[in-house]
Length: 558
Image 1 (cartoon, one colour):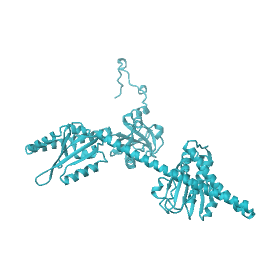
Image 2: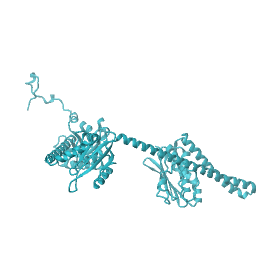
Image 3: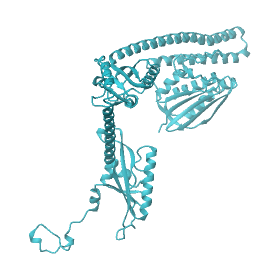
Image 4: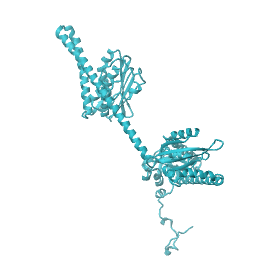
């Protein structure tokens, strides 16, 4: 065609001039393509993507430009991501021979981007096709770029699935109608008997289950009890797989099976498992009907909504259980307090008696040879008293919410090393080996004195409960956190006690292995001090005689 048709009559006779044609904006045309496209270079890195593609994946051009196509859009499970990689590799490998075929469907779980999605993941179905772009002025198939076309097939797949479900439902209903029609004459009398039984439960929901087909025929009231509409089809499978609460299914099946085996009636209450509303409590009663040969022919029964009665019953049970737990907790606190008062009395009396005894001895003897020993005993017991008084004061401040920390950058590795040296003499005096050679220099925001208190309490606890062996202290960085660990080869902790060792006034040493000094406040104080540093503490032990490990984790200061 050599001329350009123009609506202006005066131009009908004018020869078409190509230079007067509007210039095609290729970039704008690419953006307007209805299909999603990616342009890759020979290294399979993203060079360009059109608006349809970016809208499809919910990303901007800056998110994907220059990145390998294998690394973008990493949604879904590991299996789905591997399937996506395989499809891409196949398409890109085929494109070297010209143009690849459409790939198989790819199922992908992606985060929803619309308000109607509610932040949940949605299932998408894609297929892709790759083509070589021609070089400027060169033949097709010899370009330096690859166009990857992405076709969304989600609507088509969902439509096919809906059609399949509808066909299956229609087939099921057609088969049911055929069976009912064939058996209508033979079962007329039996249906009349069932009708009379159902009528006796006129205020309840009546139902009948055919064991051969699993179909359940029930009244409208029964369907309302179960949360169904009057047009819904009910089957045994749907009852147990969707309606009955998962926690109640085994109990209902067991009760029905045992009663039918004994040819007795059954009565069970259960919750409905619907997710779009509150659970309802249903009471179901039923009995089996048997053929002359003893085989089960039908199960008949009724349902009753007992939600109000059951909720009142459960509320009373909960109140009774809460009262029981409150009494037990109160008794536990009273016992712990009595134990604490006894412990404090003993712990304070022992160092005071030692101080008074040696002071009196110095006054009477006046022997200079006893001076060093006496001052050492007095100093040691005075320090023990000081620690106990500090723990008592700190516990009171924690309970009243008045304990605070003054955070500043602290090298926790150096701090732990200093505390280890302070306690080394006590450990070696018991014959223990204190290992503290894995102390990485790590800066945290902490109150230096409170952090020393944490390390001191953990180390002294390990020394206290280790008759022999080793105590190991380490400081390491991991995943943006500093981990301070104290491991010992001491008495260990049983599984039951492990869950309450951080409670106040608790001393896990009730096995007759000998009394260990202390107020039962050390680990409770450590837990609260760690919390004030926005950290966590955990404990583990393989059991009595297997030692224990305590790990404190606090954020690294950046």
